[in-house]
Length: 347
Image (cartoon, one colour):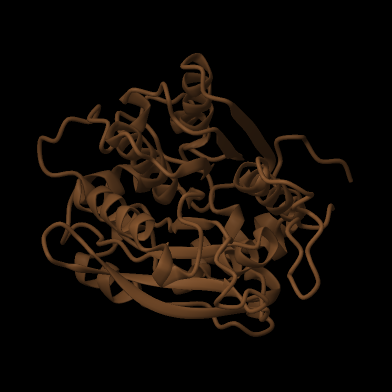
């Protein structure tokens, strides 16, 4: 049986159909109370669930902390540190991870498989930010939380036992938006420690002008109607859709750190990523754009059902390693005795 290059992988199609039709209702069909109640749901870290979501890497320890926001709120942090890194090993870089969920849903525990993988393979301290969500906390609260927490982390390398002069921002979907926004805000401050931004199917344009928004309007995992609902929850009434704090595509892009932009071909947000990568390149920012065909939005969270997940993760790790370790002596892909490997295996 032959498949169109645009057709979804059969196993991916089966899983996403089950998720969309059985396990969850679209955000636009749920009340705010239902959305809030759903935020705490996590997938168990055991088979058969982990066959789909990926297992948490047991070579990584998980701890907790907080960082102060400008209004006195304490932003919860979920911190991943390779066990092979002893406390005296303070030369590991930091990856700040921002989870997806349309600025409305999601939680940091859901991303344990991916964050622990990045910590292990990049040999980095990964800090996942539990920023505040809408509609209780509308824009720009999430962006301010991400900036404030990242700034605090930069100033407290002694707490993390890490080198906070070498940081990266990474996020998927709404988290990709927040990573891009945070990179711009840190650039504007003038002392940004961010050496790389890894944006996984990011939302970059709240005007919803990307052609893929209509082309993939009824795609699995995320529809145009859901994007509109997320936007209505996130933005205050009358908020300018071109405000760079919510639409990084309309911000000033020169002087930003190099970027990896990964998009899903069957995704309403595909061209948000494509257009942002093109705009970065036009502004003189080194950028690598990879469009993963035959997969929908959210594919990074279901690696067991996506044949190209190993390639996606290997590319992500390779780019982070290259920019976080690329100016250091020696080969970062060859760990010292007792250390975890820095690069993901190919394939």
